[in-house]
Image (spheres, rainbow, N blue to C red):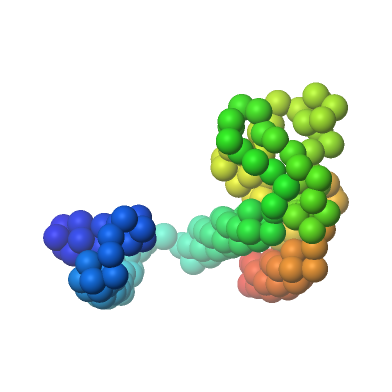
Amino acid sequence: WFIIDLISIFPVDIMSVTMSSTDLSKLKILRVLRLMRLVKMVRVLRASRIVQRWVNYVSVTFATLAVIKFCMLLLVWSHWGACIWSLIGDVMQDNLDCIDPERPLWRYNPEGESWISAHFRPKMLEQRSPDNPCNPSTIYLVALHFSVMTITSVGYGDVVPVQLEEYLVCIFVMLCSGVVYAYVIGSGC
């Protein structure tokens, strides 16, 4: 699997910028090889059988297994919700330049407003926050905060959608979070 993994991580997009169209057609073969990684997904099925054997061997109670499963489900959905929320904020934002990551440059562009700029700009202009919107970890943690608050239906309201597309994604995340939370509470009680 090492050869397939090595070939599949080859940066085709970066190479396409520097090469001509004839060389680029040769690199498209590498994209097909990336599909070979899907074959590795079959191994996941095999791993689930190994986990089932391990559970039988260790004899974990159903209640313990259910709690672990629910916690994992909440963690995975929190991560996915944070990834979706940070992605839409990054895509919709057009008024922040991170040329110097230590000193973000804000531009006035009402169409380029997103939840990221609405959340960070007031704090940074008033010098109240050391958080940096150019740091992906900071964006992810704020998005994770939003995701967890949405799942638990607390919703503090400090991270809010600004554009129509963000509202649509927010509605989607809320609906999925409600289903996940209802499933966990309904199955656990």
